[in-house]
Image (cartoon, rainbow, N blue to C red):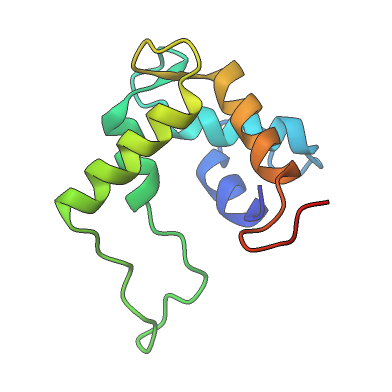
Length: 116
């Protein structure tokens, strides 16, 4: 969770954003921020909203526009997320699957890095 300020701005008024949150708390709040129907799982539409939710720091008049995605790109990205991270194949990413996939991503070597 690299954008602490962005997450805290969404949580303002819901939780005490002045207190220091650990990585696990940030991950939980990030997940819940995107769980719009509050069913503790992210469906395809919620994944698309998370993907397209722009949170760039530069919002001035000279700021670059948010990235735009073609519908086919969003479909492909969403399908890949569900294929890779929906471990029980129910069509949703629940919180435990989200945590597991985040852990796998942070422990994986960067693309193109030589194997250890």
